[in-house]
Amino acid sequence: MNILRTLSLTLILAAVSASALAAKEEEKIDCMIGTEDLQARIAVHAINGVVQSFAYYSKWKPYTCSVDAEREDGRSEWKDFSDGTKIVIEKGSLLVNATKDEYRFNFQNVEREKYCGMSGHLNGTIVIKRNLPYGTPDCGSIEGALMDRETE
Image (cartoon, rainbow, N blue to C red; front, side, top):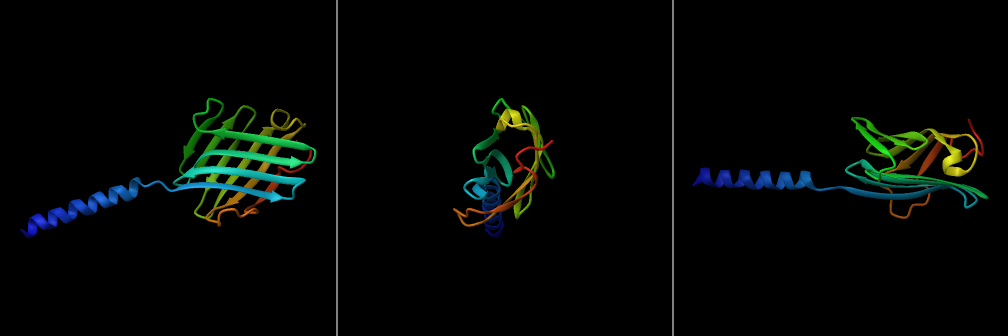
């Protein structure tokens, strides 16, 4: 009887462990950095810390810029590595690194003409803090040339 009970408990624990591993931790983050007239916004959808889609929007009144991609959207290529994801879009690429505290999007030579109607390239990093209360309007930082009017 003890062997049967031990076997039963072992099977129950294995089932609970498998179900916990299968559980998905979904994150949807939308944040803004800056003011109404000069801002960068990014929305991120991730599952278990792996970005599934993003949308970047910036405004330098009166100009706006918009870049977005989603896995298997037919417009972008996604390659996952142990330390992040490379996203190749039509005119440039991004490297995304995730830690327990943040997502770091590094724009690499994203052509502004295609996405912003301006000359130059988006080169820089936007950092999105994770695990903030819903609705937090300022959740990260910008480094590099993402908010400059023109860059090369």
